[in-house]
Length: 214
Image (tube, rainbow, N blue to C red; front, side, top):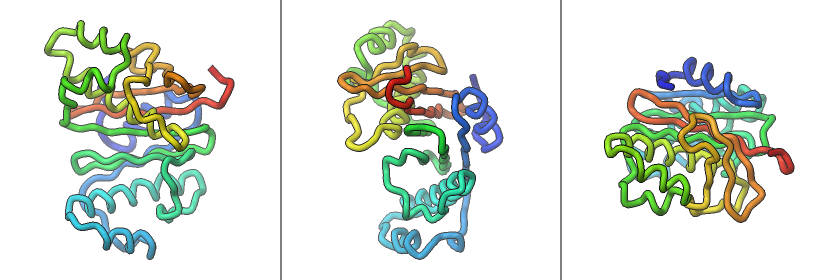
């Protein structure tokens, strides 16, 4: 399903498909510094590149919005990653944040324009998914790999620390469905993963299910 990259469209889509109440914030363009806390400003001053500074400011504004919606302290310097109640992603001048107080863990990932090299497929796809991807027409492989990457990243962010690091052990039960259960080999972690196509890429959101819930 193709959706627009704006807050209303993201909230409408993921709010409808997720089993728990979630809140999504989106920011792009220039954001001011006046809303930053002392600790956030201090972290910003330590960043060397303009690109990193711009991403940080955008991300802080999106994350503050998402935290405020669940009644959390909007000072993002208090958040430790991975967080069980919020997640953040940046890409190509956009930042998206998601929050929820009713999940065991949550993760979001946005990828615009960038396609993982095909050579990475064997490292980031599980056996069954890799075989299905390899069987796709050449013209469909790039978009599929981009979506799988966002799904894996979202699952990774929804994991508690220490996070399993090898994407080839992440398994989507229905890899070519926009909404799929997921698991990680060798763990009891279970997730629901929701993906949506954007005009220039994909966004995926993962919710970790409570222990014992399948």
